[in-house]
Amino acid sequence: MEFFIYNTLAKKKEVFKPIKNGKVSLYTCGPTVYDFSHIGNFRTFIFEDLLKRWLLHLGYDVTHVMNITDVDDKTIKKSIRLKLDLEKITDKYISEFMSDISWLDIHPADYFPKATDYISDMISMINNLIRNKMAYVGEDKSIYFDISSFKNYGKLANLKLTKDQKTNLKGLQDEYNSNSPRDFALWKARKKNDGNVFWDSPWGQGRPGWHIECSAMSTKILGNHFDIHCGGVDNIFPHHENELAQSVGANGKNFVNYWVHSEHLMVDGEKMSKSKMNFFTLKDLKEKGFSPQSIRYQLLSGHYRTKISFSLAKKHESDKIINRITDFHLLLKKMGADEMHGNELPEAYEKFKKCLNNDLDTSGAIAIFFGWMKSTKRNFYGEKNERYNIRAAWNFTCVFDSIFKFIKHDSFEIDSEIKALLVKRDEARKNKDWIQSDLIRDQILKHGWIVQDTKKGQEIKRK
Image (cartoon, rainbow, N blue to C red):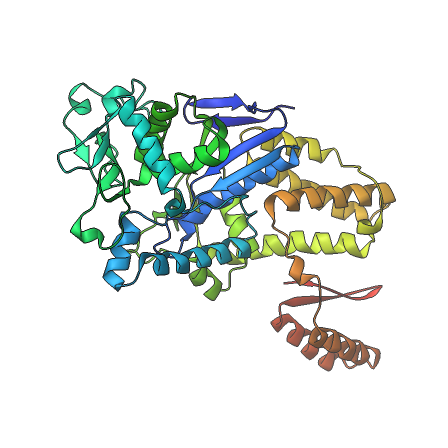
């Protein structure tokens, strides 16, 4: 069964074929560490996590690089405003980011290169571009990439450039309007408002432009030609367009085979905005009682190439779904599924796999798993409760969790306080003290657990 992925460069779904058999080289644009990452950033990071987990499930050996942008316009402005060294600012937010991805159960990259550690590689790449007559020294002593020297400029973003657009337009800013193609800065000559953030170069003191950073780091670690480059749709232009042009211009290689981008995140149906107060960091969501699994569910339940809406109001709904999956996993453990042997998988797995092989159709895959889980649970209480079915159910549930990470593994252990309350309630029931029994049940409910009375006795599950 082939894996199809949408390639932004080709503007269509393509069969994924790695450069090296059985191996995948993956580069994902990481955080700019001048502030906390927000939920919109994590929509992209969690999509990339899903892609990586699916590639690993398919048996590929994945080498993953996620860069850390620790020098750019934003980081410098913040360090100057707070009158702190750049490194103090960036180290703080790198630490916060690493803590966030750990909490969200995002599979860590193999490499987290910092831009400031690759300045010499950026200078070398810029030298190549000057030598290839694709870059020039501007009047301000900064180095610019000449977009007219790259005939395919605009192809990634599907821009149709006129002759006028390819001349006399230069920009020092890292980010600019999507309808304003221009020669962009590879190296920015030292300015007073940069403070003490500068490096020596053949062209004088200065600092790199944002776009050259990713080109230098990705090719240094993964080579001049690698498999997949990911990011959000906001990265397509100008960042990835510029990255593509300068990388091919400097190295004369194909650079990247598959460009894969996730769509914007909406919040309660509106574009995320600080002015609308719908701008959430993980700290904000933790304070509102969100679990990492609930956040992952909201961000993965829609297809990565469609706009999805994150909602505080959906927390109760997503919590219920997460608890349902977690309870099913716990039920299988109680039935001894984890101690059984065998690699069996139910028929539903093939349908699940087909969905994810079709450009990571997460909504389809989740629907198949939920439908299968419901019917399987019903069978467990009927006559079809066979050892084979239990082990196959365990295997499929583990596969599902390895890709989506929706199961709350920390909820399997019932703490001593809850266990003591269950013992007291059992004693009250034996004494037919139904009022006391109900009071204890309500106490347990406040701790987030539901008690059900069955023929076998008390059974407990997450609320």
